[in-house]
Length: 278
Ligand SMILES: C[S@@+](CC[C@H](N)C(=O)[O-])C[C@H]1O[C@@H](n2cnc3c(N)ncnc32)[C@H](O)[C@@H]1O
Image (tube, rainbow, N blue to C red; front, side, top):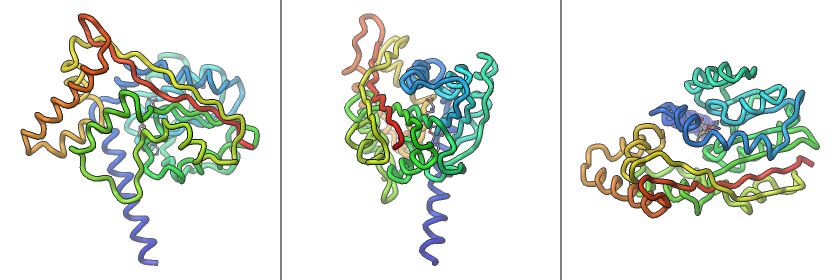
């Protein structure tokens, strides 16, 4: 009994920490300026239609939820970090989309079984620490015959490498937490969803991120806007040598991927996976 209470308290503390991380910096600018096409890609890949009930899990500022709502679907944008919703509501207002915003942990969704026709997550559910628990929730709330659609950064792509680069500098994850980019591995996701889905279709593609004068300029911007990177720098903030080393490693990563001439151009690979609930 005490063990259960301790586990619940530990999970609450972990989620509060994650919520604080995603509230750091300026995630709305990342979704708006760098990766807006990912939401549209996911909505198209999943074939969202007018009148369908759609849940976007870990929706952030509605990168997928807003284009889904613009099809005429009835959309709920859910996320652990409601601090992101004002920017999401502003995005929706700018585009004329109407949808509902609800605070929810992807690992314990507050929705009935089979209550959505389509369940989406755009580089979102991958950040829930317990992959099987989160996958079980995606499956549970999707009706039989409904669709699940996921966009996830791949382990081998730029963002997967960025997380590997930051790992030695970040505090160790709690026991049982799994690395987010595993959701970019098709076999991993097939294993999580199991025989509860059919018609799995997966493809890898990239979003191009540009507009930076140099790899260092990308790094300096990124460490201002992206919560997990800001949190990693905070963890080593009292050690200038480690800060300098992480500065070096992130710029070196961007330099390795840079295919621009005159300015920095990076391709960030992701997996688009869709499946039908049996
Ligand atoms: C990279 S952002 C993606 C947001 C949005 N889907 C997009 O495409 O821009 C990751 C999101 O996952 C959310 N998140 C992290 N852990 C979560 C959890 N356990 N449950 C629900 N959302 C979570 C964060 O609050 C954040 O909004």
